Image (cartoon, rainbow, N blue to C red; front, side, top):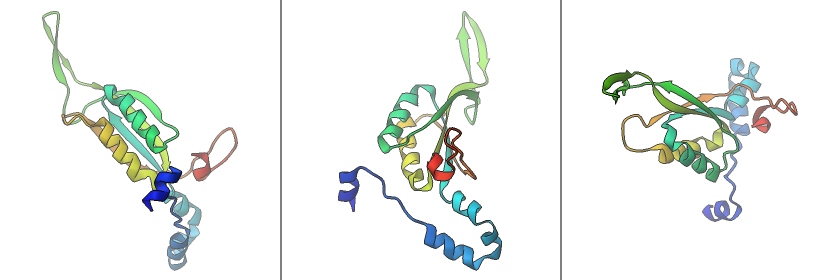
Length: 154
């Protein structure tokens, strides 16, 4: 199994269709929303908030596992850290909002674990303020140029 993965350098693609069809057949409510359930189990949006100087490391780690697209935004905020104080020309200033980088990655469900692991390893410094990772379901993805939808648009 690992030889196939290393030789072809492609992640295994799992086919959940038979499982989904069995679930939908037993539940009338879900069967009405078959397309929603199927797409919900296929696509995820990973949002990661990391320290700015870790961006290159995270980008390289994601490229190594085959993530094809990332949206990067410069943001400011605070968590448990609640900012800090700085001295500038003898005066003390309180910095409430710390600069962070927000990454948004749309991927298939099969790649969620490897993506989270790559971000976690690359962004970790072992200090407070390393960041957070949020995982949410995507209802629909549409590629504007071609009109492709679902996983094909990712």
